[in-house]
Structures are given as structure tokens and as C-alpha cells.
Length: 109
Image (cartoon, rainbow, N blue to C red; front, side, top):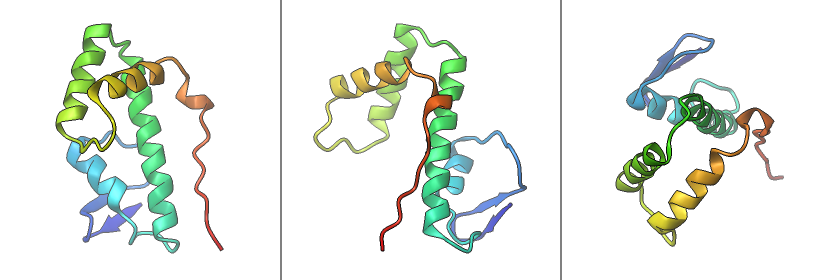
């Protein structure tokens, strides 16, 4: 479960469908966990992989991919990454199974 007034994350334990605002709250929560930033970092990876699974399940066409990349480009800061680069990365991400990606958090010291 998440119950964090700082991030606005208030979710019961278990799978939950999130809208954009809730996804942001989920990805920012570090106060609901004893290991704070480590859980937050792990949850951010989980969110990315879950979003990719959701997108792939919809079998986006080339036009859909262009629209998704355009939306991403409008709402992110792209330092050293062009829209063309983003399109190629996005297209590549649709070619592999997110279930085969291991979400690992590295801890220093």
C-alpha cells in the first residue's frame, strides 16, 4: 500500500490501473517505504515496463507510434535527444517483450 501526502500517492496494495496524475504520484512516492528512494526507483522502473506492456498490448500502428512519440516529445525535456532519436528508440522498444526485462536497482556503498 501507498499512503504519502508528499507525493499524493494513496493506493491499496496490488495491481491498479493508473491515470497520468496517479502514475506521477506513484513514481514519486518514497515516504511509504522504509528504504525510501530504493523503493521509489524500483517502482519507477516497474511503471515504465508496465506502460510499455500496455502500449504493446494495443498493437500500435506506425501512425500510432508517431503520435505517441510526438506526445512524449511535447511533455519531456530532450537534452541531446532529437525527436528522430526518440522515434527510433520508441520503435525499438516495441520489438521486445517487457516480461524479459529485469528491473534492477543498484545501491552504492
